[in-house]
Length: 207
Image (tube, rainbow, N blue to C red; front, side, top):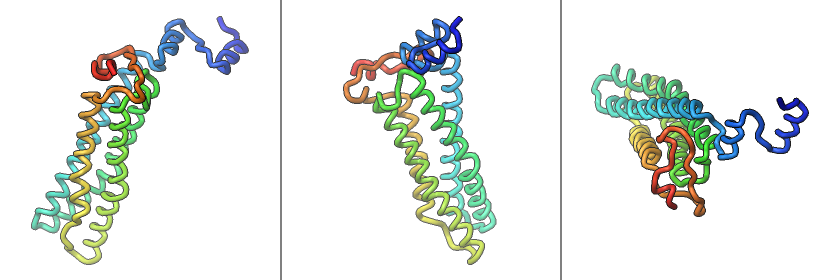
């Protein structure tokens, strides 16, 4: 058994300590056990599905609010959009990004080793920025305007932004599934252990 001083010295020196399995896993570049990777992958897929469902629901609500002739229904649609944009959607986005980063950083995929990871992260970040800077403000402005001045129609920016975000997330999902374009800077892709969903595609591994 490793003594505390030796264990601390090994950690400071950057050497793997613990069981032989853990040392071998760290030597291969992975920092999650097979069970940990599967749990992170399940959480990532579930959160991404909820996030995509939220942006699609927001688009449906925006179209419904613009098309309805009932001001009561329009107010209800905008209120529902506000709830989604400020409660469920941010939570799903945070979990999706956090688990995605965990899967990238704690496995041999790496965060900047494959173009598909960079592209997926960029699309997810763009979705968040549009949601925070455009959709959220447009919803609040629309609700405030309707309260102060009565029915004022619908926001063109809100409708356009809610139409773009599902496309961005669908693109990120498609890229994450197909894993195109190979590795960055001519790196040779290494196949991590674990479920087939975490393994590089043949296209990635041959770059």
